[in-house]
Image 1 (cartoon, each protein chain N blue to C red):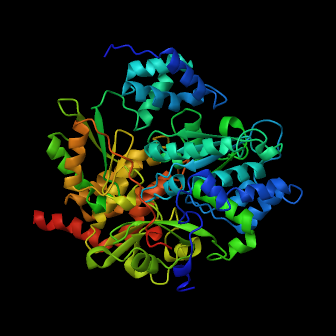
Image 2 (cartoon, each protein chain N blue to C red; image 1 turned 180 degrees about the vertical axis):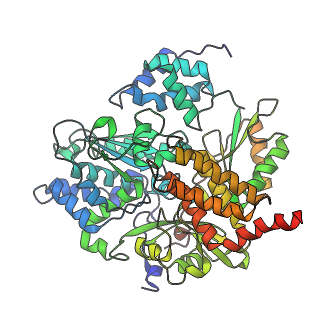
Image 3 (cartoon, one colour; image 1 turned 135 degrees about the horizontal axis):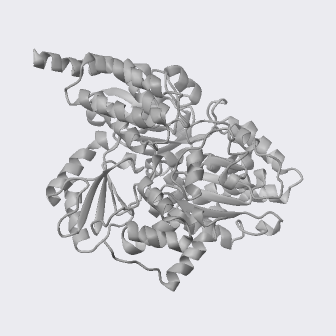
Length: 179
Length: 429
């Protein structure tokens, strides 16, 4: 827990570029936290402290922001975070079935991390892929749509091998008929 | 207009390959509306652009359905200090997945619309707030913004004029409430997304205390169409009271879910049965949530002749919202569904106002009790009483958004709720 994190000179330059987009440094809190989380994998109190110091913003403010937004991880997570949507359209299209299948397969419950640190699973709110339900998001990045058990098996196998999913494009069905 | 929709050609997201690339966009009349304005600034003074958009009556596509041009006209006269446009791409209302189509397939139409909006309101900086979950889509938009900067559509002295505007993306980090405009501004300012008390309205005191307008992404994408073809042309698309093209996001129990672009005012049953291929598995339709999770569900028998526009949906007992239509078949457990919606609002309440913070929790707990088979008849009265104590008693509309689905479902699907409550009586006896 007492691990200390630092930004390199290059990081600081990047953060300066971010800050330049806003009239004050406080406004750079979200993008700076994103930058830190992308680098360190989470936004635990020591990362919060670093961001606070870098921006000159009170640590308590950073803590408040991190705890408000669900995508900031208040503690280290698994190497891959599977955010399974179970909200509304996903709920009525088998979102919970997929969540439970993943829980069973990995031997953990939503909110937990596998003992080997490979996977965390979360049941999350609407991710904005309602027409492609059930779906999940991998570590705040790519969406994996139209989930089936087979697709989940393949995804988990790929992720174990270090292969991240590709971007899935969902064209407008209207276009497919060649209008 | 029964069959007109079949010959409709999408304009917000047309079927043109690689339209996301600026050269393809330019070849297809892209940035012509902006050029038209900047070429003839005597005709197209900022005030005239505002008037044209106001006449076109673009109803805000983010849920409230407010006339976009009218909103623009609330901006005070410039005083030499900064003014802002915040584009709302938070798209976090469950059932909504339309703006991402613009980011992916036609980002320049939105960018052009935002630039025209900035010109009309004499704005210096545009921020595009997009939910953090859309990272891949933000990257796509950022590429398009970079292209627009390179070609001189954004930045200093646009197309050789003395008009300058910058555009920045701002990535959210997972909070439904940040789609609410004042909460969005707080989030942009680097804070927890707590909605602000209104008044003052954003046009008076917005981002960093300066005049600000907040528009939805799809709303802004309509602007170049209006400026290129004129307000009169635009008013002829769909009903005059709610004109223009709409991105309908259809999800749930249909054969062909997805985002479809058709004129506003489409017949709901046509959208479900013909456009989206009908209810999955030949099942019967039970209900429709017409515009995202906060819009009251309509029973199948309430949908006859109802069209997707503010007026028709209000008469039917719901709202247009974001046109994110969730289709529910006969097997849907409405109690379970409404419980999950309540769970969502409980999770997403920012916690600032007591009626919402506590109310959403009690709705969720009470509905969970009923869905788990432990409900009593009096719980239905309790739910309605909680709704009553939430509605209209908070800073923002999240409490109302949480209460409406519960209130209207108990009204419209009462037998289902009662059945679950009665079950326990028999079990005990």
